[in-house]
Image (cartoon, rainbow, N blue to C red; front, side, top):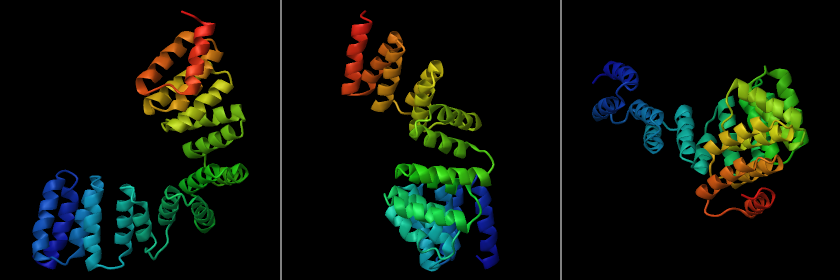
Length: 291
């Protein structure tokens, strides 16, 4: 196979992989017999595996490509991504740190990896630098505010939110971050309307965010909406004790005893045992609304 034929084959494989990736892999294996030291064969194979979410296979072939093309920035970056997708955060960071040319995507991935490793302050430092080095990017501000909230730095999180709102158009992520900040500050109405704006732009599905949204609605007296939000949260996280506790507590306070019993019954099915809080609420229901 000539070099020109190999180039044509690689182009054909990229197109073919969208419809028949297994056959595309087979063609690459045949090409490897003629060009065993060609890094593009291994990197193309790795990219196909990555797209199919076969991250271990992707990492194996990116490593093979790296043997023939050492210090290739794209290979190092994709190898980091392959390990990150497997939850191998330390290995991911090893390869991210070897990429010589900075980019906003690389900085974000490095900061996110450090956050997963519990190195939150390092993550914050990188993200703060990124807000100055690159143009305004919503995902940089989003992760930065999340990390500041995790570190209980509410004042600083609020300052970066204000900065982001000046530089970026309204969007789902900023509205969600605003909701979380005001929820933590116990300014319930602002938190509720911020969550609602986020939900209208793109449906909220993280259970912890829905939990905060539901509690905000309850604190504002929007009980029916809170019920719907708690139910939504439980569809995503049916084993979360604190969700059941806040949900049942709200129902008892509003004297919705029948629904509270149904939620308690669901909690019993999903968990090995009721928490002390749920047992107390169960006793209160029996006292206030005996069957």
